[in-house]
Length: 269
Image 1 (cartoon, rainbow, N blue to C red):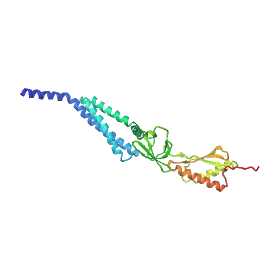
Image 2: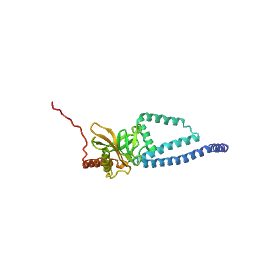
Image 3: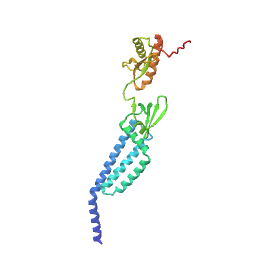
Image 4: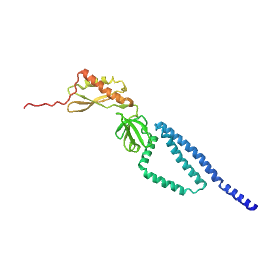
């Protein structure tokens, strides 16, 4: 009996000694892996804060990312110990494939949202033109980007749609060119009208000091069409746009310049 007990103890000791390196390695994988997961989750949280992601979604997303990464760490540690994880991994892969097929479009929008957060083609409060929708970015959500248009409409654009076409970020630079068109009668002198317009633009409060362009763009049927191009910051773009037209109209009125309009002549027969 004593011999059997000693043999069992010896066998257990030998097994522990044989398994010790794998167990220690697995423990190290868990410790280091969980630390890395915590660091990644923290960095993702900071990126979400900078991107202005909805505060209600951030805990859910960080938790989801943490759980998924920790599962990968546990599977890796089990493999180090020598536990057969092939069947388990195959089960996870099959379930993931089934869910992915069912939510293909939604997951595509999620992936696009992640890309937006990482590469930052636009940020919250930026003035953007996405798929023909011009407005300021209010939120970058998991699946959608929400913008408020200049006429105060809330537009929800799926992230996959937002990133699949051409997008224009009007806030990428400190200044924007404000494109205006002014009609000048053919009988007026261009140099005179140019001076009047430049004087009117000097009265625009929020215009940037960059020299504006006032040149002939084309000859219309009834007027000479002038290209008027002052500069503004993204935040003051529309203030400069409307105020410029207002000041030019006042200056034309004070100078007695009448813009031509179509006149239909009726001949007496």
